[in-house]
Image 1 (cartoon, rainbow, N blue to C red):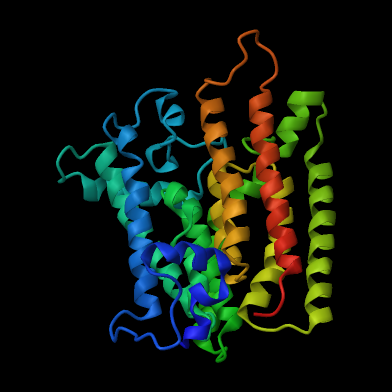
Image 2 (cartoon, rainbow, N blue to C red; image 1 turned 180 degrees about the horizontal axis):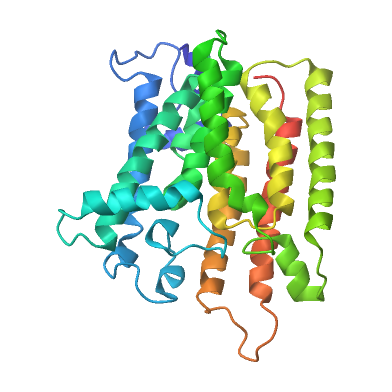
Length: 358
């Protein structure tokens, strides 16, 4: 990789942050023979995952007990049976949890904490695989995968089954962009599609509006209840419009490559989460691989993730009952959380549509 392609040379946010360690990479800078971009990205992912695990210690000490404590301390995880939504977990999750319980039985305690630790190791391995796949999407721009590897959203949400669905997104992206579309690409598409459909289906199949959904806000604020069919029709229309807009932009600028493929899918994917009947905070992981591969730049990635994290914090405190009005009124603080999340999603979609060739 040339110095001109280094993140500190092409991204103003990274260039500014690099001043802490000496400034952007120079044109005559040397390169370590072992620390390739892919290895740096894997190390970054490992550090982010470790930070995410450390953030759960407040709940691990109490084995995620208590009705509201995990939400109040922002350390809930569906792996411990403490989800943010009422929807059922993906069907393979129960089998994986039972297997983890058997593996955790000989460990000290052998309780909920040990089971979550075993599942966490599995998800950590999958996150590292996702990093490798994203780094290999475009040989000329491996650092785009840093948008995944160093993402704040990954740190706070990786202990979630949505990470498996995110790996499915990475597999499909890799299969679409690889030059040799033989058996490996077909297999990756099949496996990725299965993981995505299986582990992300609660977002779309929830029968009633749930956490994070704009439909739930409309019900609470105005008493407006939309039937499932009406919600699906509106979502289909918005997704179709988003897909057309993304395709028009791609054709207008005659763009090609992994980043463009990711942007083309990212815009309709944002539309899905905007009108999904259930959109818990960890659903942001479904968009993270696409946002990273789209190579939008850290400014847009951080603004979107900042909105997601603010919404995540407010949602947790809402679920814990800390933001409930004393007079029993409307949960307006929670409505603000949903509005902030939607604003971040819209910003991300607009950034993808405005992005030029890289």
